[in-house]
Image 1: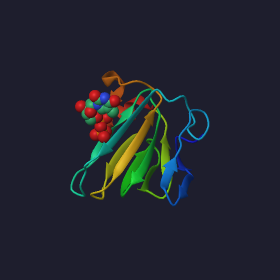
Image 2 (image 1 turned 180 degrees about the vertical axis):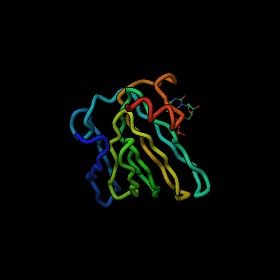
Image 3 (image 1 turned 60 degrees about the horizontal axis):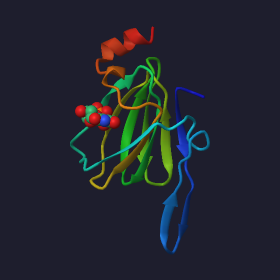
Length: 132
Ligand code: TYD
């Protein structure tokens, strides 16, 4: 699999609403160890600005929209994440920046590892050194 990949998630929609399913090693390409959500953002704020040494993750926009910039040290690519079932797989050692959040944006994040502050790379210069 590529360092980043756009994923499509089909949901089950009927007159009762919408149901989305995420399953380890099925439509999520790793064993999920941790799930968290991010909400309450506005257009003015941005998040991310880090890479991970080991962790990979899938980010899914379940409501609203935002943009994500992924940078593997060679290629920088911006992707619009919108609630139409689109998500993004991000491998370890990929720098990400999230911004342009709609007020109603809710992101669901599935991660391959538990929370470990020492897995974060918060400096872009250190990230470039790490991938050499
Ligand atoms: P962070 O991963 O930096 O979020 P973002 O990239 O969206 O800006 O996390 C923000 C804060 O939340 C930081 O203080 C660490 C804390 N946090 C946890 O305690 N546990 C977690 O699982 C996550 C993802 C974050």
